Image 1 (cartoon, protein in one colour):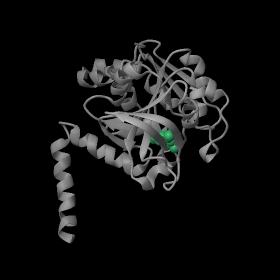
Image 2 (image 1 turned 30 degrees about the vertical axis):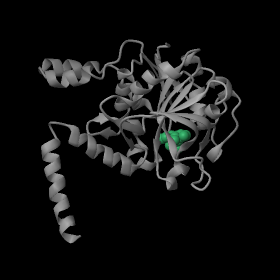
Image 3 (image 1 turned 90 degrees about the vertical axis):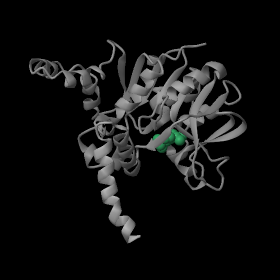
Image 4 (image 1 turned 180 degrees about the vertical axis):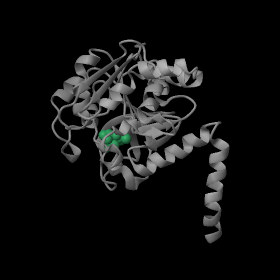
Length: 295
Ligand code: G1P
């Protein structure tokens, strides 16, 4: 069994759907309740046993790098004031020394390209990829579930869930050969197929475990859907060699790449929080009462 030690976080996107907020802060720093989006993905990776965190960044992402740094002046001042709770909150975000690396994607050529630029940091071992826009709420982290399943299957693994057929053009979609419990063995993958030609409604969600053989395919990848270098196309090129399995994770996924999904995730996570639950659900009930009366 290979231990999955490294994870790549592609965070170079411009976040245009969140303008004007993303004019001066990276999308990954937008808070879901009170934790930045990136913290959810990093926590899920840590829970899955990841030890090395590789961020593929771009210009304007400085706040993201600073976020993972020690805030020495802030900690001193909190210590002096005896703010133990605030210090404990910071402590929970502290990463082990040397665990983070940052590499620049200096051209926005697509997700396949983002993974390719991380090759020298990943090296020759299987690794995880987490797209922080996909936030997955659940008891057991989605990546942790996949790591356990991957120990038995090997090959490439992608997180999957069923989506309405009308939405296949927003996702990578699996052509499923055979299913076994949460596993869907793929004979092909298509990036953003139109609803009428999609091979299934089983979509890729932003968690992957990839074998290092993917890099040879990424090196020779031509433009795919939307003119971008698509990770899905590189994985598709390996169905008959490394093998590709979809994993139906247990959990609720929010598309935090859209404002609607982000707001829904904010509400769901606020309702999970013991300190906010009661006040927030009362507020929602009050807001909804007039809507019910009107209906
Ligand atoms: C990316 C992948 C796509 C996947 C999706 C999941 O697309 O290319 O295969 O289904 O993430 O969120 P994007 O949303 O970046 O266009």
